Image (cartoon, rainbow, N blue to C red; front, side, top):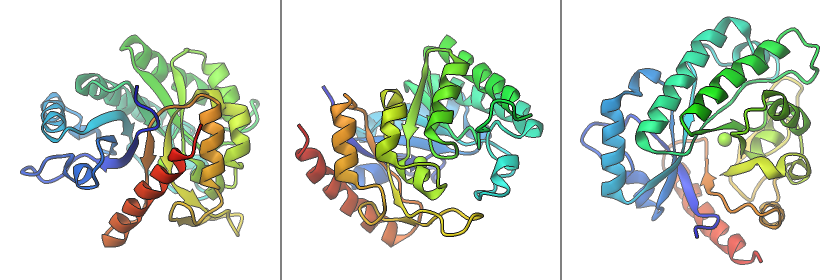
Length: 278
Ligand code: MG
C-alpha cells in the first residue's frame, strides 16, 4: 500500500514535443497533481496525451487541480468578490468550467478534482452564502455521478466554516486538499489545530509553508517548507495518527532555478520526517 507518497505540483500545457511529466520524473518522483487554469485545454485529445505521457514517464496523477476563468485577486480585500464560487456574477461560468474539469479528470482516470471555492462566508446569513453552497453542491453532485471526489483547497475560510460547508453540501464525496500554508497566509487558522476540525476529510496535502499576514489586507509571505509557521514534523505526525496516508504534494509558488532547488530540498526533508512516523 502506498503511504504518504511524495510528489509535486505539475502544470499541463507544456511545449508539444516534451513529456508533460518530464519535470516530475527529473525530481525522481512518481506522483503529481496536475494543475491547469484554462478549460479550453481540457479536451479528449489532451486527455489521451496525458494518459500516454503518464504511462511513458511512470508518473501517476493523484488529482486534477482545476483553476477557474475570470478575475482573481489574491488578497484580503478583493478576494471575496473575485475568487471561486462565492461572487454571484462568475458562478455560472465557473460551475461550467469545473464540470468540464470533472469530465477531463474522468478521461485521464484520476480520483478527484480540487479547487479553491473562494472566501466562503463565515456567517450563514451572508447574502452570498446559500448561492455558494448551492454552486458547490452542483459541481460536487456532477463529480459524484462520475465516481469522482470534489476536494476543497483549504485556506480562504476558517476550518470550521469549511467543515460546515462540507456538512451543508452533503454529497458524501467531499474532501480537503489541505494546504497548511494557505491557512497561515490568509490568517485563517493554525494547521495543526485545524486537524481537530477537518482532519478526517484530508485526502491530499500540499507541502507548502508560510508566514502569517502582517497587514490586514495582504496575504502573508510564502517561504520554503521548514522555514515557516507550519511546523511540519509535528503536523505530519498528527496527520499520520489520524490515519492520513494520502499524497504529500510539494507546492513552491516561485519559478526558476530556486524553485527546483527548494523542491529538491523539500523532497529530502519530507523523506526524513516521514521516516520518523510510527
Ligand atoms: Mg495549495
